[in-house]
Length: 118
Image 1 (cartoon, helix red, strand yellow):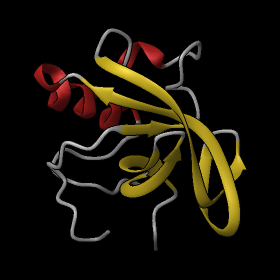
Image 2: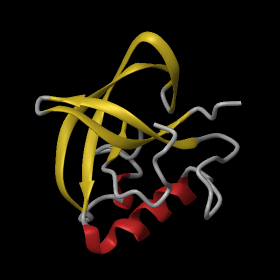
Image 3: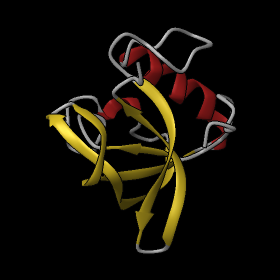
């Protein structure tokens, strides 16, 4: 999915502190229209806050369909939280990457914060 542009309005898949009930959910709270459970296949947790590609792995999370009116600002706040420089998709610790997550409604393309590809 390398052809996805950084300004694509994809939903956001989260697996860590951005989930509902977790310490950084305030970055998303009140800024989405819909949340559905999702799993990211082909990834595994390296630790609580980091996932990386791994054949056969699965990471459970939540898929947020962000409100259009605040989409860019919400994603910019999440990028800042993950220390991704403005205008980039890759920081020192995380990469915002387009992935395919699986939901009860079927597969969905989404942004996810994953270990950077080096």
